[in-house]
Length: 193
Image 1 (cartoon, helix red, strand yellow):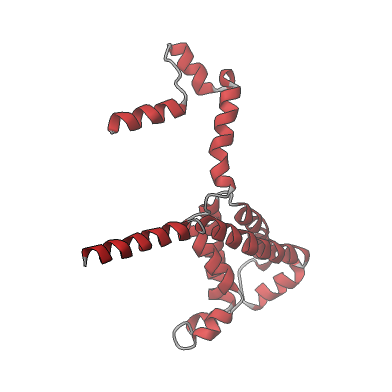
Image 2: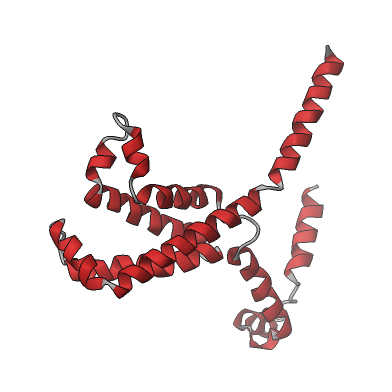
């Protein structure tokens, strides 16, 4: 019995290890596909602000012209940032709020039928965008994104121009030795082991 349990556990661990390789490509696909769709939606709204303003006026929104511009910009720039994975959690939070308000204001009937008629809820325009933004908000952008590249770019730039770093120059004036961040990580991990 113990051998069977061990074998099943090995297969389980192997399968989970294999599936974990798909996480970042999946998140990349979600970000690019739905970011592109959001960008197109924002682009369309920016080029038809009068129609969007008219629609917002029919919903009795306050300052419909200003809200049309804000929401068009949120979708346009948010779609770009979402696709790139730049500031992904903040961008996803802003998009989640925006899309939740789209349900509340424009698709209230679909929102209220979430339990009584789920097909109506999932067929509403904001649903797919909302799910995509929630996926990235909860799980992050994955390993293939601008968020992961920024620390490396900053570290490389600081290494190339150490004299321009205000922190580095202040430490030199105090006579404190400057230790590269990789050496700090290695020494702190070896001291805790």
